[in-house]
Structures are given as C-alpha cells and as structure tokens.
Image 1 (spheres, rainbow over the protein chains, first blue to last red):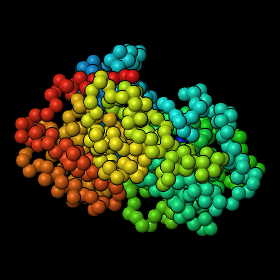
Image 2: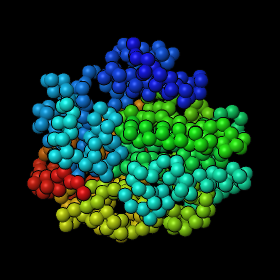
Image 3: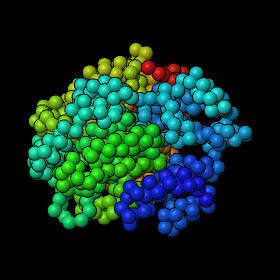
Image 4: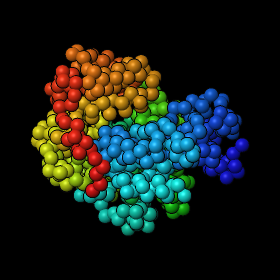
Length: 158
Length: 436
C-alpha cells in the first residue's frame, strides 16, 4: 500500500521510540503516507494502523486532530496562508486576498484544473517573516509581496 | 536578528549552524567540563538555580527548581522533552534558535539529561517549521557521529540519546502534557494535573519539559557560571532573553537583549513604528498575554516583574506592536477566532466559551453588537477562567478582558455606531503588505 521508500522512512521513525511504544510514530507515519499519496484516504489510515499495530480508529483520531493532515483530496499544491494577528498587521490578509484573486478561488477551495488548493492557516511561528505561507505543508515562503506571489505561482505552475 | 546576548550572538545566518562552527564558539565545552571533572548533578542544578534562569516558554517558572523536582534516584526510565512547538501568535524565536544554533539546544539537553538522570530526550518541533525539523535531525546526526550523543558519551559511563518529534498543526500541543500525549502518538489533549510530569510524564515515567530557549541558555550557565548569567539581566530576572517583535514596526524580527531593557529601547531597535504613526497598543508576551496601551508600555522594562506589575505577562517574549491604524475590535476578533479554532474540545467551558467569545466579538466588529455585549463577554470569560484542565481557556479569556478593559470606548463606539472608530481606509493602509 505504501512504497518501500516510505516504509523505510517509517521504520526510521519507529526506531526513535522504545520498542513497546511503536504508536509514537503514528504522527510521522501519517505525514510520510500523506507525502506519498497526496492525502489520507481511509485505506491509507488503516494501512498505517496495521503497520504500527494500532486500532484504525486510534490512528484516525490522530489524523483528524492535527490540521496539517488532509482527510480529503487537495490540489497538487496546497497553499496555506497565515492570517493571524501578527501576520495580518503586516499584510497577511492582503496577501491571501491577492492569491484568491489570482487563483479565482476562496479558502478551502481547489482550482478547476486541480493544481491549487488554498487554506487559511493559524500561527506558523514565523510572524517576523509576514506575510508568510506554506506550500504543501513543508516549504515555508517568507515576506510574500505581490511580486513574490506572482513568481511563486508561476514556478508552481511548471 | 540582532543579539546582545548568548544564544544568537556571533552567528552568520545559515552559514554557521554546524557542529564545527558551534565548537569554534565554545560549544560543547560545558559538557566536556562536566564529563572530565565528573561534576555532581546537584552542583549543576545549583548553578542553574543561581543563574535565576526562568522558563522561556511563557510561564517563567524557575528552571533550577523545576529540575530539582525530578526524582533522580527513581529506578527505570526517565525522560526529557524540549518544547519547540512554537505556535503562540507573535512568537518566532525558537525557530531562529533551532535553525541557526541547533547544537546549543542539543548541548543544553544533554547537560539536563545528565543532571536529572534521564537517558532519553525528545525535541517536539512545531510542524509548520518542517525545514527546521529536518535541520535538527542533521544536527543530531552530527552530534551522534562525534560521540556527543548515545552510549557512553565522550567515553564516560553517561549515556543519553535525543530524537526529534514533529507536530502537525495543533497549537494545544505547546501545553506540556498535551505535548507528551502527542509524543505518545495520540491526539494532543492536556492531562489533568496532578500528577505532574515530574512523577508521571512520558509513557508514565518521570519527565521534565523545558522550552527551547531555556535549554539553549544552559551551556552558557555551566561554562561561565550562574552568577555570570544572572548579571546579564537583573535580580529575579537573570540573563538575556529573545524578544520576537512583530506587527507595525519597521524591522520585525528577533532581538536578544538583557532582561530589564526598557521597552522604548527595544522598539527603537526594531526600527520604531512604521510610517511615522503613533503607538497604540502592545501585547508584550504572545497573544495570550493581556494587551497594554502604548503609553503604559513605554514606561515598562522588558522583564518578568515589570510587565507583570503593569498588568500583563512577559510570556514567551513575543511583542506584538499595534499602531493607531489598528481597529482593536478587529484585532481581538482575529485572536478570538484563533482560540476558538485551537481549543481541543476536551473541557466544555473552553470548547463552548471560545465559540461564544468569537461570535460575540465578530458581531460587534460587523455592526451587529448589542448594548449588553461587553457584559456578556465578561460573563463568558468568568465562566471559562479557572474551570478548565489547561490554560488555553484562560489564554482565550485574557485578551478579551484586557481589550475590553483598555479599549472599551472603541468597543462601545462599534456597538453604538455599527462601524469602526478607525476609518476603514486608515486600517487598510496600516495593514498592507509590508516587507522591511
């Protein structure tokens, strides 16, 4: 169900915890599974559960609690913009509005071609870099002026 | 980023984070001294007590005292956890520590492990700064390779290993027992206390949790002595501290300065207020800390005691600066939405109350406020505070109480006139995309 590369990464995570505490790797295993599959379908969650020897519902509980896991399909690129207060004071909301206009979608929507999903994020711990956004959870983009947003979207189109 | 301190000093951005660079800056000397001189654990804890170091994550609890709570003689596993789950709006210091000086956190944790008899530690890193997580993994590999982590560190009989664990989008995991639940691979819901982590922590074993910046301060304290660290700050407020300055300043960023530095000096370091506008309000310690009017802040010094006397908290050192273009109702609306969104839902007063707070502030901001809404807000906060397992409920309530207390007229204006006191165009100009 998951590739050998993903399973190898999950095994490395499991090794970080005491031998009888494999479930500690559930967060990273879900992250690795999502990186491979794009989002977490029930079958993927069940597979992770079986791999870690956990009840599927316990893994679902984790997947549904933390907001960077996607339990429904998202576009090839998920853009999450922080609009919390410190970011908003330096243009976080304006940046989000600009992206909405450029992509023609609102928060929690995906472009018709399936390329982009836009999300509103909570504090990413990078307020000094405002406006700040994440691409596919892991790539942080700082000081996003309109010009830099144009460039980023063009690069991501490729 | 600028430093008059000990953690971010002498760094050159992305170019000086590796082990070799850290060693050049005196890194791992403290650990080597401990191992070579077989310094007793009590002496180390005594030095940390002497330093006056207080927890840098927000609560400001004396670190040495916390360490002394660990039952060192307790047989079996004991754990150490580092709280790098930095997601309190306004706080962004641990990210810079971890990406520019990761080894100081690693060394601090190894020393803490030695002092408290822990064999294993975890650094819990905020999921949104994933690139920092990857870097920390690299730094751990370097330390392991150099014999600084693992079995028989530097040839001694002391063993300690350290691993990175990432969050994935949940503010609540910054609460220390939620963080432990999360390391255990569960949803991050805080535990009822007592028992405290020092007796029942990770996997039910004695555990100490400290903030990233707290651990990062330890090598200096051991190398130079507790007195030297204390002297960097002021009594009861030892050391230098990182302040994350965000909002309407010309140069947002991290500033590492002695505790006790006047706020006005910090503001000046951060380039002053943007566009020559006037200072209106400051949240001095992260979004959960009560807001203070600008004039009150201008009389404060940046330390635990001064900010507390002024009616707020130094918290994590996250200074959110708002100028006269800010609508205070709108500012509070955004913060209230955050707590509503991030409440874990375990306690009814917080789960329901944060929703009430957000909806009432939202309707005031949108011209639908009712005459008794301010009383209602105060009543909701009174029903949340002190009635929940963890501090998130209080954290959601304190901004509401303080915004209404200090800027009540602005809220009343909204309710009466169904619009903002600050003209929309002024707000728009003030919150445009700004890059220093």
